Image (cartoon, rainbow, N blue to C red; front, side, top):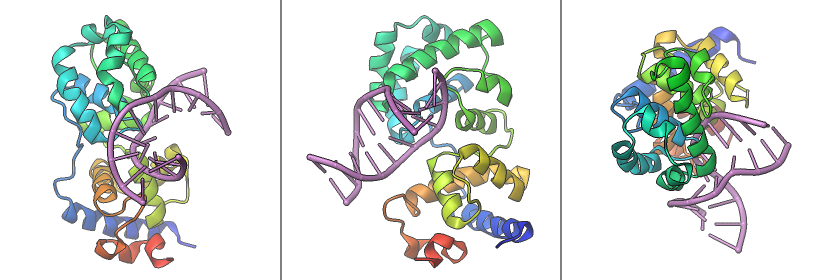
Length: 214
DNA sequence: CTCCCGATAT
DNA sequence: ATATCAGGAG
């Protein structure tokens, strides 16, 4: 059984290594304003960032404001975002989200967790992406990579994303949260992928329960 | 726990 | 042909 100080020192070492291996690690969604990151992240639910970027390249030229999305024809928006999957839910959520942004938030993307979570289609992952990247408010972004890697590395035993989020917050200094989340995504894509992790090439294999228990 | 869905790896 | 990728809502 590992105690909390042991977890913290391991987390610190892993975080240091990953920040050196992926110094450029940042959100890989394409955007140049808050609304675009919010929409892109909503589309990224169960979809790779790469595919989202293909769709948003055209989408962001066609819909340039909350008003465009709020008054969009649902069927047309569905077609515009179709390749990202779950397109009916996502189109409905985007329209509902932008209507609420206009109605309750002056058309601006909220800068706090509670308001972001009140938006349809926005959960903690999406909220933390927006908070971290737009408002520089640290948060652990628990996507599928964060979940898989933090379990493999042994930083948490939890499966529930919210519990993982709070577990990691408890063992990493606040100023590392966003960068650490982003580096996990990079490492998850490049080395520690779901199907066949390349443990031989892994810089943190020495700290990894998954690798050491194979 | 179930539903939502297209794309790619195997 | 099928398994897996990748979050949120009810």
